[in-house]
Length: 491
Image (cartoon, rainbow, N blue to C red; front, side, top):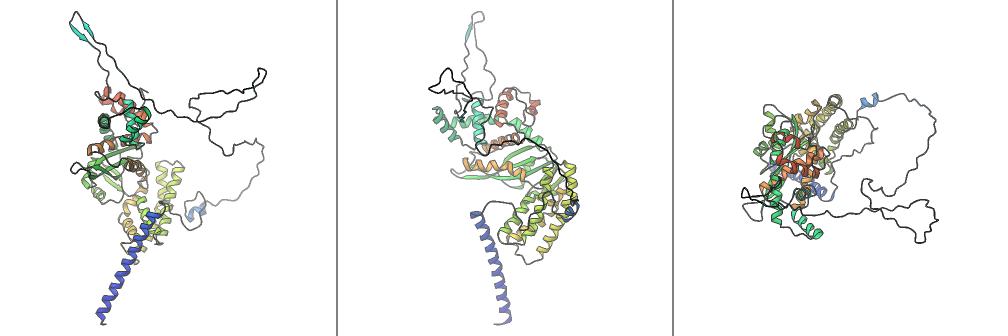
């Protein structure tokens, strides 16, 4: 065998080894997806550190104090706690009391106590008909008929009232119950047959009433100086081909400072769709590694922040696939999150959080960068999970580190991902939206319900009150009806 053939053979063997490593990595990833636990938490193999530390040697030295002991002696009554057992039923629930006397009770018997047994009962929702009767009169002198006008209603010609539709909307978008299942429930529990097309049409009409309020909500969210943004797939029944679905996207933004959430439906994941969702937003934008976002970094007035949760997932995946070189990086990322956790638990304000990031987080980031630089010099296959994790993080290094220069900015996009999670549950139940307009209506009501959740508001109470008020409400005072400003009037 000549020298040239040997070189070609060696190159072929090397290429086969790389392909083998890549296939092994993909197989390990697939096995973990199918059989493994879904967890992003990295647990270091090293012994746990003392509580309250920020995982640096300097902290350990600073936290050393002289071991002083003091003996305190006192007496107290020992509280008797009930071990185990069931929780008491809520005191605010109405009680129907049934008293059962002994069969052989005598008038001379003296009561020495009461044995109480409580069971929680449920009565299905009451369905009723709101009937409006308007007598007609003839005015003999004026030769005309008199009849009272109908009161203002959110949807004039709907067969279903605001209370009924509030229940249907909440059931669909919070409890993820499709319309056809609600119809079956009404038939089973109340023996009331409802047309699916009529209920669906009324659902659209009632949601359309909220459009001016949604437009104002969108305007306020995009006026915030700092928002998180992400997107998730949302199937829509295709108008072009019967039985097919179109993969659209629900784009989401959240203002962590003011607890506002905005969803909008776009037909694609393109840069144009991103631009239509964000509108004229300028300020601090925190996103994942999707390439379309990178174009925003060069726009005037726009500052892009990265998401450490996405970087962490990639190193966690590499570690689970057997590439243990990822563990040291994961341990450092864990320290970044420990700082954020302690700041949150200590209720630090923005200035205090900025200070501790400057003192602690920047040093950790420098160590992570050094480790990544060392790993990038090693013979690590770029297509392996570790190679992809290194490339992902280094490419977005500046946006990932920028959060340490701002006290109000989060370390990741996880707050927004929590808002998106209910949409994934809804997709499993009602599978797809009936049209692009229906998808946008879903985005609108998801925006309101997510914001209600941020402000500890019962979404059913908010929606019913707004539906009863919005038709007569001053258009210049729409802000009063937004969840963050809402004060009930008609409940």
